[in-house]
Image (cartoon, rainbow, N blue to C red; front, side, top):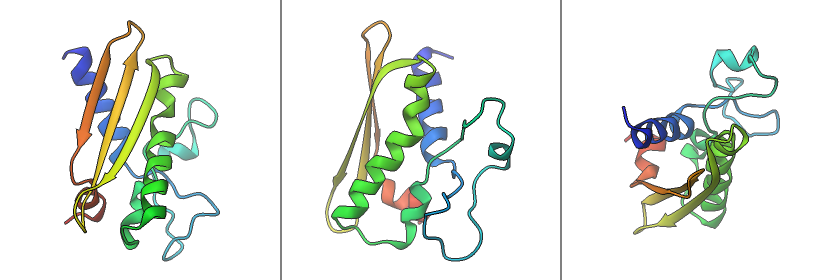
Length: 128
C-alpha cells in the first residue's frame, strides 16, 4: 500500500468513525456513542474518530458548517501531533441546498501536498 493510500485511509477513518460525544455535546438520549477503546487509550487523551455524527439532526446553516470544520480539524489533529504531516487544512463548502462537501489538504514532512475530497459529506453523516 502506498503512503498516499495509507494517509487516505487514516483520514477517512478519523473523519467517519464516531468519536464519543463530550459531556457538553447535546445528544438525543444518554448514548454518547464512540469507540469503547477510547475509555482505555494506550496514550492518555488519545481518541479515535470525529464528532461529525453530532450534525446529523441539524440543518445546513452557517453554524453547522463551522462545527463540521472544527470537528474535522479535531479528528485530524493527531496527524500533526504524531508528526505524520506538518499541516492539515479543512475546507467545508455548501453545494446546493442540501449538500456539504469537505476537503482536506495535508502537507507532508517532505513538503508534498495531498488533497482529499469528500463529496456530499452530508449524505455520509446522515447515512442516506
